[in-house]
Structure formats: structure tokens, C-alpha cells
Amino acid sequence: MTASSTQPTTARLSINQATTETSSTEELLDACAQAGVGYVAPWRHKFIDGDVRRTRRALDARSIRASSLCRGGFFTGTRPPAEAASDNRRAVEEAAELGSPVLVLVCGPVTETGAAAALEAITRGIEALLPHAIDHDVILAVEPFHPMFAAERSAIIRLDQATDLVTGLDHPNLGIAVDTYHVWWDPDLAQALERASAKTVAVHVADWLVPTQSLLQGRGLPGDGIIDLAGILENIARGGYDGPVEVEVLNGEVWSRQASDVVLDVQQRLMPLLERIGAAV
Amino acid sequence: MTASSTQPTTARLSINQATTETSSTEELLDACAQAGVGYVAPWRHKFIDGDVRRTRRALDARSIRASSLCRGGFFTGTRPPAEAASDNRRAVEEAAELGSPVLVLVCGPVTETGAAAALEAITRGIEALLPHAIDHDVILAVEPFHPMFAAERSAIIRLDQATDLVTGLDHPNLGIAVDTYHVWWDPDLAQALERASAKTVAVHVADWLVPTQSLLQGRGLPGDGIIDLAGILENIARGGYDGPVEVEVLNGEVWSRQASDVVLDVQQRLMPLLERIGAAV
Image 1: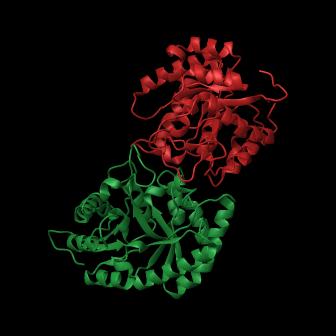
Image 2: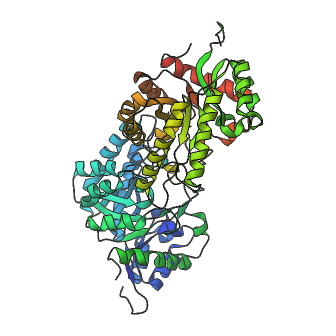
Image 3: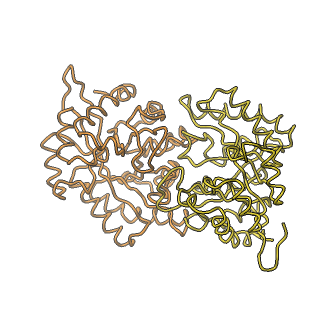
């Protein structure tokens, strides 16, 4: 994508598809192409006609790239480990077919066996999946989640835990996805972002609303909440990250709007942030 | 209260009044007296006829003690600092009038000036309140909250932060309230409980439900969720804590039940936990 003089292209901006959950994938892609947004982050359940190749063609036709694919993981939880392993291998293949450099991992919850056992199961699961990711030239991105999701989505709830895990397995095809919504509360965030910087391969942005009405669908568009988004993004940029910046806002009110409206709104909101971190084209 | 041979008295059990929010204070006190529960933790807005002395007489008449008073704090947030200071001094006086050894502090949220500024304002607020607490023989208890409340209730969201603050100001009239619901997610919980042990002056119990439907009213009765309550309580007991154990469950379904039913239910659930930590009478 190239920028016109009147319509600056936010080439580094990516719209995570969860932001327009109730719109079709074509609607989202058309809106991004129209606005000059360089990336989207597709979700697997939203592939056009359930077909990853058809989705890839729809991206290519609009010169839009996938910044990441959502999602693999759930190494712990209710599904059997063999099913998780098989599904995660398929997710890696889909990321490759989509041309997505990154597969985001939501690692799975703390279960009755406790947090330490969950962390161990997650580590072993990632270790087993990594060769397949290397074969397909896909980077697995461990995403730490907000602690309120520890029992349902991710036993990894501090950025430092992700850094420890990823540094321990140490491979270029394994990194960290940093989401402002999930990490902002950490009292040691500045240091944690620095520690994670060499391994940060994806950045997600959402704001924390006051009050927050829903655990799952209560995220805010950038600027509507209380997170110091500029401070976090500047810290990440100083650490060397210069890849796409995904906006991922799960919010029932946002979902009631047209994709084209949401994309333009997000673009307006991100422009000053991206300019501030020296990233706007 | 004394135990009969068939009805063991849970003398160390305390029912936090938020567990029976929709029942009257008299209903709660009668239910506790009937069941042989030794303590309640009253809330200030539930004083009988708004009168702390009348509430004290109602406690005394049933030989029930206040384990703690809820609550003071909110050193940050929307109310002016002078108003917070004045209200907190009044809360200290009410704790003394009630015969409650402890006043629980919900310290106030992270605001637009950021987490570090909030922590500083909280520390200064506690420092200014402490002499009044000493004068009234009341212990101020800093309660770390779950990170999902950082923007609305408490900038102190890790137990280690509370320990740092309380250790820094270092006075017998300043301690920590540990609530299983607020701290369970912490990857470093075992060490954090040990660090906090010398300053732990109150213990609250609630469980984490899967799924959690509400940030505010989605807490679980002990045993209904996934927190290792026995493990946490044993850790706290090993650290030397031998005071009351409060059950504080904010849950819309629980609130729809009679106080007498809830108290007996909580008592049944806590009995094995209290026995396990060697605390049942």
C-alpha cells in the first residue's frame, strides 16, 4: 500500500478481526483496503467459506497482509492433549498458507492441578509444536493474558512468565505477543517490557474502560480508557519492535457498528500513537 | 460461644456482611448466633439505623465479635483528598466504637496520573491516617485487590506491593488483609504469602468461578471454584496467622438466599478447611 498526500496510509496498522467480530471477512478486508490499512489479523473461525486459501486470495487481491493468525494454544483445559496437538499443527499450517508470519498462542488455563502444572504442560506443548512451526516458517507468539482470564484462557498472566518460557526454549520461531489490555496493570511493566523486547513479535492494542462491564466484551477502543497506550508503545518501540500494531477490541457496542466505520475510527485513533512512536508512513 | 458435641462451633469463622448484602444486619447476626459463628465483618453502610453504637450493642447481645470493619481507603479516585481523609478518620473511630480490631482499606484506583503516582498518594494517605488509628487502637489493613479492579478500586494489586508499603511504614497498627479471591492468580503467591506473613492481620476467603460472569458479583462460595483454598490457608497458618477467617462472597445468586441458609452453608464449607489448618474448635 502507498500513501496519498491527503490520506496517510497507516501501513503498520492492523485490524484484529475480533474487533469486527460480527462483520464478514470480506467487509473487513474491503474496509481496510479502502482506508489504506496495511494489515489484518484473521481468526480461524472467520476464514471465507472456512477456506484458508480463499481467504489468502482475498487478502492478496486487496494487497493486505496478515499480521498474525488467531489462534492456536489451549495446551491445557478441557480438550485432550492429542486433540490440542493436532489442532495446533493445523493452525501452524493455516498461518503458513495465509502468509501470516505469526501464530498467536492462547496457552490454556490453570486447571485443578494448579498453576505450576499448567505452566509445565504449556511449555511441553510449545516445545512439541515448535519443529512444525520451524518447518513452516511460522513464529509462535505466546500471549500473556490478564489475570482475570487465568482460570478460563491462560495460565500465563504476567509478561515475565512469557519471557521466561520463550527465553528458556530460545528459538527465532518462538516469541511473545504483547497486548496492552492484558499487561497494563503489571506494577513492573516497564522492566517487563524491556525484558521481553528481544522476543516481542506481535503487539496488540486495546484500552481499559472505567467502568468495565464485561470480562469478555468490555474492552475499549484506544483512547476511551485509562491505559497509557503511548507510554507502552514507546517502550516497545524503544525495545526495537517495528512490526505491525494490531488493534483488538472485543466490545459488544463496537460489534454493532459497520466494519467500515470501525476501521476508520480505529485508524483515526491510532494515527497519533503511531506518529508518536515514529511509525506512521 | 461454646461448642456442643454435635454442633462444632466455628469460633474462628467470620461472615463478611457483603456475603449477605441483601439481608438486614439483624438477620445476619441472628443467623451467626444460631449457627455458632464467632465473628462477622460489618460494612459501614449496613450499621443498624446507621448507628454504630446500636450495631455494637446488637453484636454484644449475641456474643458476636467484629473481625474487621469494611471499609476505609480510596485515597485516590474521584473524591477530594480532604474528604477521603475526613471519612477515613471517621471509619477508624467507627471501628473502635464497634470493637473491631481491624479497619480494611480499599486503597483507591490507578488514575490518569498513573500507577506510581497512585501508589505514592496511597502511601501518604495511610501515613497521615496511621496516628489516628494508633490513638484508637485500630489496625489498618491494606487489602491488595485483583488486577481487574486496578482502574476502579485499588492500585495495589499484588500482595508484594502491600507488603512493601506496610513494611516501609512499619508499625503494629498497620497490616495486610489477604483475600484468596484477590491474590490466587499471582504466579509468585507462595513466596508473597511468606513475605506478607509477619504483617497479615486479616484473611478473606472466596472462590473463583469458572466461568466468571461478573467482575463485581461473580465470586464463588468456597469449594465452588478453582482456587486452592486449603493450600493458601495452610500457607497463611504456617506463617503464624491464627485470627478470624472471613468469608466474603459477592454473588447475586447468594444474595437471593436467606442469611440463615447462607451462614449454615458457609459454615459447612469452611469446617473442613478450618480443621485442616488446625483451627476448628
